[in-house]
Structures are given as structure tokens and as C-alpha cells.
Amino acid sequence: MTADAGVQVTELGAEDHACLTFGESEELFDLTAAFVRDGLDAGLKVVWVSEAGPGLAAGELERRGVAAEAAMANGQMTAAGCEGRLLSGQEFRADAAVGWLAGELASSARQGFPGLRVALDMSWALRPVAGIEELPEFEQGIAAALEGSTAAVLCQYDRERFDPVTLASVAGFHTRAVAAATYYADALLRICRQYAPPGIRIAGELDFQAAEPLGLALAEAIRLGGDIVINMSALAFVDARCTLMIADAARTIASQSRSVTLRCLAEVATGFKRIGLADVDGIRLVGRR
Amino acid sequence: MTAEEERQQRAPSGGNVPAGFTPLDQPFDGGSLYALRSAVTAHAAAAGMGRHQVYDVTAVAHELAANAVQHGAGHGRLRLWADDKFLYCQVSDDGRGGSADGAGAPDGLAPWPVQHGHGLWLTGQIADHVGVGHGPDGTTATVRFLLSPE
Image (cartoon, rainbow over the protein chains, first blue to last red):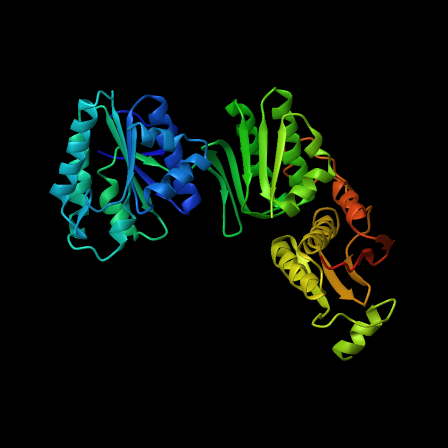
């Protein structure tokens, strides 16, 4: 099997064994939140295995508009660590981990769920864990377990920390390759789509020289439909031209009876207030100190 | 000329320079605007300005420099100096003269109705005083900010 490039996390379905690569925790939580949200909305059982404890995982999902705490309380969702699932006594055995997944598949069916979604944070494999050489065998086992099932698995790899050889060795066992849609990325600026809540995320420093990718991202935010969040929480600078472009897009969205939320630093928020954006119906300006 | 002599020569109203502040004199072009903003931020903070004012000064410095890049010679020089009351920022463009901001549409216009001229409007909103001069040697914009620590 070969991985399709450029698949959106919102397009995943049954039998998909997807390889998500992320560059920062914000991207990981955003994409995972979309995967979990869509699973919960479809009535599926959702399991998220990660280094983050259940409290942190639920908090990150709730912050992105996913009702994770209620789903965990009623048994539709589980957030848990790797120990006892992928690892046993900090040792990794591919057959045991695949066995755990098969157990989850059977358990969700017994509970009456029409399907299962499993997100696996693979950061544990960066530690000196015994048996790590069985990782490709594990990924192969997942692919076999998913055939003919109603389940989907999203394996999450940090592309900055995993070496290219390891990523290449596991990529072939996945049916899908997932990453955030990126309009622009270099050392100073990143403009990408945000999935949960829907919108775009801009981080770094933004000036007129990135007007073209910013325009594409804003145009897609308008086309997406529904309420939009323009997440600029990690945007340290935005110049006058780009401030106007973002404001114009926000006004366009608001004029369609949709709400648009602009999250940004207080200094950046002041720039939007100067041009009257705080007084527009449908536009919510959230400045953070 | 020593750094101290240079500082006194530039400071139009004389007076004491804020402790820890050193003047800035930095060339720029389209590829070095990030480095320019970073330097302005550091020097404005060293003049004793608070976080918001440092951001505003950096924004104004960027707009003036971006104007020289987009509508002037494509490069220029930024100078920053201070006395006991004000911080001064001067951007000079040694190329052809022209109206500051909005002299023409740059390449690759975004698909948004951007009002060219907003950069200078923003400068006027933030700075205490703005002066723009044109001459055979190019355009020079000098702006002044009241030092008001937060």
C-alpha cells in the first residue's frame, strides 16, 4: 500500500490507516481535535493514546470546541497513556500492541458503536524503549487489523523529532498521509488551515511580502462556510497591509451572517481596533496579554 | 566622531539620553525587514518604552521602511535616536523621490481592496510628529514618539 499525499484529516473514514506528521504541538492538537470531533459527531467510539494525561488531552480538545469531557464521562471516548496499551513495563512488542488494538475493535463493537477511531501519539517511540525495532511490524499489523473493519487509526509522528529513515520505514504501511494544509511556511512565518475550530492559523511575523499566500488562506476561510476563527495567538507582528486584508476578510465573513473570531496578542488587537473592527457585528476580537 | 558625539548631533532637542540606550543606524532592503524590526524592537525597549509602545514604534518603522522598499529605491537606511523626552525614527531612501506611501501599486497585489496609504495613516495615528521631506537625494521621513513607559 502506498500513502496518498495531501489528504485532509476531515476526509478520513473506515479502514483508513493514516500517518499524521506534525511540526508543533498546536498542529498536533488541532488535527487530533478534528479527528476526534468528526468521530464523536458520527457516533463512533474514539480512543486517543498519548503522552498527555486524560486531563490535558480533554482540556486541549475542549479548548477547540470538542465536548471531550462529556464523551469521556459517557464512555464514548477514552484518553489514556501508552503504558498497558502500546507498552508493557516500558517495553514494546508489536504483537501485544496489535492485540490491544484488536481488543479495542471488539470492545467497541460489543458496546454497540458503529465504528472506532483511534489516534496514536507515537512520541513514546523517541524514548529508548526496548523492542522499538518492531515499529514497522506494528504498523503492518495495524493495516491488517483494519482490513474490512469499520475503524480508522491515525498514527501521529513529530516530523522534527523522528529521523527521516524511521518515518520512511513506517510510511509505506499507511494508506493516507495527513498534514495541515499549509499556505506558507518558512523560518519566520507559517500560514496554515486550522481544523478545530475551523479557520486559519497564522504564526510568526507577517508583512506585505506574504500578501499572496495570506490572500489565498483568507479566501479559503470565506469559502469554508460556517463560523471561522482566525488564530493569530502566535503572531508576533502584522503590518498595515496585512491588517487590512484580514479585516476585510473578517468583514466579508461577518456580512454573510457568520461569526468570525480573531485571536491575537493585545498589541495586534490594538491594530484591528484602530480601524474599527471591534465595533462590527459578528466579529469577535479576543486580545491576549 | 565618537558614538556620544554622533548621538548629541542627531538629538535635535539635546538633553540626556536614556540609560542603556544606544542609537541605531541600519541599512535595509526587502530581504532584511525582519532584522530591521528586530533591531528597532530591541532599541525601543532599551529606551525604556513599554511593550505596547515598543510594538507601535516597530510597526511605524516597518511601514516607513516598507514604503521605501515598495515605492522608493527598494532599499534605504533607518536611524533611531533618543533624548530624555522623545524617541526619533528616521528613514531615508536615497533613490528617486516620490510621494510617501501609495505612489504605485506593487507587484503581486493581493485580491483584497487594500487601501494603499494606510501605512502612513497608521504612522500619523501612532507618532507624535511626522515629517516627510523630498529632495534630489531621495525621501526622508522623520517621526517622533513621546517616551512613556507603561
